[in-house]
Length: 117
Image 1 (cartoon, rainbow, N blue to C red):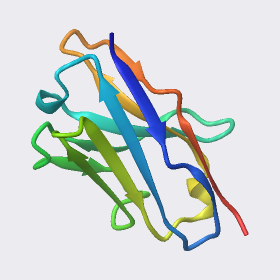
Image 2 (image 1 turned 90 degrees about the vertical axis):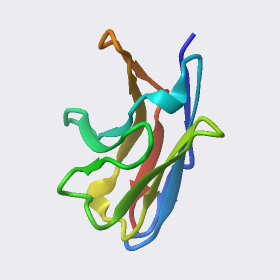
Image 3 (image 1 turned 90 degrees about the horizontal axis):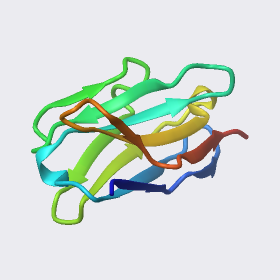
C-alpha cells in the first residue's frame, strides 16, 4: 500500500525558509521519480519540482527556480523540498506525488505553508 507523509510546513515570514519532507512507503521508492505539487486557495494544483530516481534530472516551475531545491535520500525513502526566499505567493498546501508505471497518481495528505508577516 502506497503511503506518502509530508511534514515541515508552517508559518514563515517573507524571505524566510522552510524544508519539507515526504516519507514514502509501499513501493520501490529508489527507482521512481518523485514530485512536489502545491495548491493555493481557489487555484489548480501545480507542479513545483520533480526529481528523477537517481536525483540527476530535476525540473522546477519557473516561479520557484533559483529559490527552491528538491532532493532525495533513497536510503531513507524520503524526498525533500528546501524553500528559500519565500514569498507570500508561495502560500499553499504542498503535496508529495508518486506516479506509478500504470500512471496512477498517489498523494500525501499535504502540508500547509503560509508566508506572511
